[in-house]
Image (tube, rainbow, N blue to C red; front, top):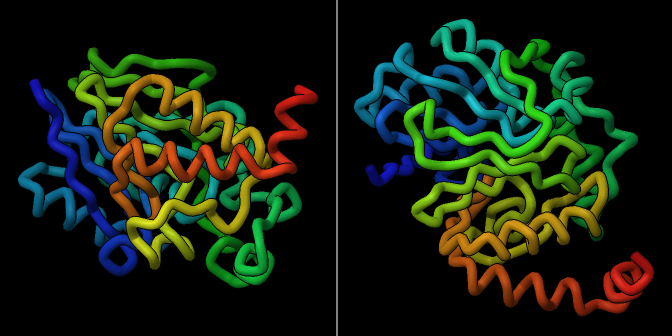
Length: 243
C-alpha cells in the first residue's frame, strides 16, 4: 500500500514542517514548536485522520522546533513517541544545549542567539528509545527509521520503501526554508561534517524525494549536486582524507 505524505506546516507554508504518513495506520513525524499542538491536531484532522488513531509519533531530533509539542500531543492522542537515545538528555531537559551547536555562516551565528532555537518546552519521555534502524511495517507504514547523526547526535530520518525520505534537518531550504527549493545547510549542526556524511549515506539508499523540516520538498538529484559541491570544498576534502 502506498503511503500518503501530508505536510502539516506549523509556521508559514513551509518554514517549519511536520509530516503525517497515512498508510495502513497513520504516523506523525515531528511536532513543531511548543505552541504548535493545536495546529498539528487540526492538520491531522483536516487530513481525515482522528488524532487519537495515531499509531506513533516519531521525533527526528532534539531541537525544540521539532519536539516542542511532542509531550503535549502524546498526552492528547495517546500515541507512543519514538526518538533516538543519543538525544535523550535533550528530550528529558525540554531544551537543547546551545553549547553543542556549531553555527554555519553569518546567518547561523545570528540565528543561534535569537529566542526560537533556545525555547524551553515540556520534557519528553520517549516510549520507544531507538538505538539503530527500526522497521515500521508492524506499525502500518512500509518504511524504516534510520540513524542520520550530525545535525544532532540522535538525528533520525524516515525512509519509505516507495522512495520518499523524511529527512529532518540534514539540510534545509535556504535561510531555514525561506528559499523553499534551494538546498542549504541549516543555521547550525552539532557536527557539520558528520551531517554531510549522513546525508550522503541516506542518498546512497536511493530515495527520489526528500521532505524537509524547513522548506522543500527536493528531488534527490538536486540534493546530490548540492552535496557534491559541499564535499568538494577544501575543508571537507581534508577532513574526509584524514578520516
